[in-house]
Image (cartoon, rainbow, N blue to C red):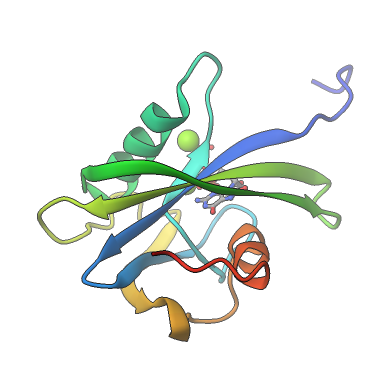
Length: 137
Ligand code: 8DG
Ligand code: MG
Ligand code: MG
């Protein structure tokens, strides 16, 4: 709606761990195409952050979340796209099964990566998180 001034939006990124590795997907379609991102998405109106983390991860990968807990946050302004997101990071362990590419128009594929050897380029909020020195326990 062009009558509304732009506002920051809230994104939820899930640091989903298995055997010491984190799940990343290569983005396509939406902004950040070609970059590697955590499963996640927009917090919907009226939704709990934990519910959003579970919903987006299930929609995108088919995986369930165990031991879901709060992580840090980041503030990212995407100048070129005119977007502004505050990302709430959540930490979880992956439930059973392998990640599926359930949204093929948005994700080129899921891979497990060591935190110390993440692929490049990273989606901006994840790059901000890494630059902050954060390491998952
Ligand atoms: P849709 O429902 O809007 O169609 O898809 P979505 O899954 O909610 O959208 P997305 O493009 O995957 O992510 C939504 C926004 O969430 C994205 O434009 C930017 C924001 N976002 C962050 N950080 C992160 C993150 O670490 N991972 C993901 N997937 N999205 C994030 O700000
Ligand atoms: Mg998403
Ligand atoms: Mg969504």
